[in-house]
Length: 246
Image 1 (cartoon, rainbow, N blue to C red):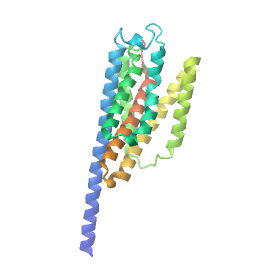
Image 2: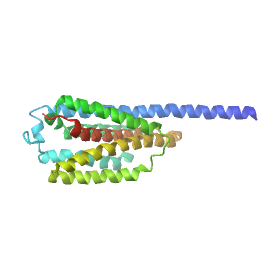
Image 3: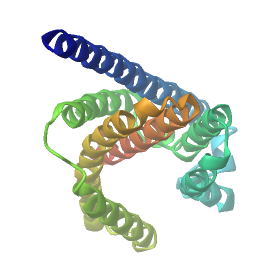
Image 4: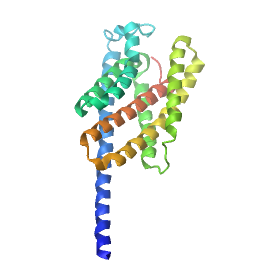
């Protein structure tokens, strides 16, 4: 009996170690996909934002107000997120990854104007500040024993409300509202980073034993997309505080 218990414990320990190794690989893939998408976004944004012949295609070169195409590009990433969520179950992992990178490139187009408005130094400083805050929030979400799942509904309502108020303020143009949006946005997406990180970890642990690699690959892409969106939003909101204008 004791020998059986020893063998059983060894088996459980081996499975646990295998899951731990798989989780580490899964999270590394999530962060890797996100990093590639971030690099692609930055490259596209810099290439368009610093090119006098390209940026005017989307925005007035003097006022930086978007033209018709600029409005389309501005809201295209939001539409692509909803499209991606509805299509991913019918897509292969390779197609989903390609879609993710196309989305990252379009996001680069939509934020390219920052290189014409803010100094390069302040953009770099804000990026590194965002990276530090993001890493801290993601680490908290990964390591905390506290169940963050109850945050989901509250955070979703917060995002929807923030989007609505942001759209309204495009036409109102209130500096006070813009400041409040930026402050709330930073806190909201910081919390979402912790929540999404824990959700990615939990989802993997719940499904790893099924051995469906295709599903796990698409799960990693969706996780990378969630964290990528959080990072971009934190960066853009922080830029309103830390960015020095040209």
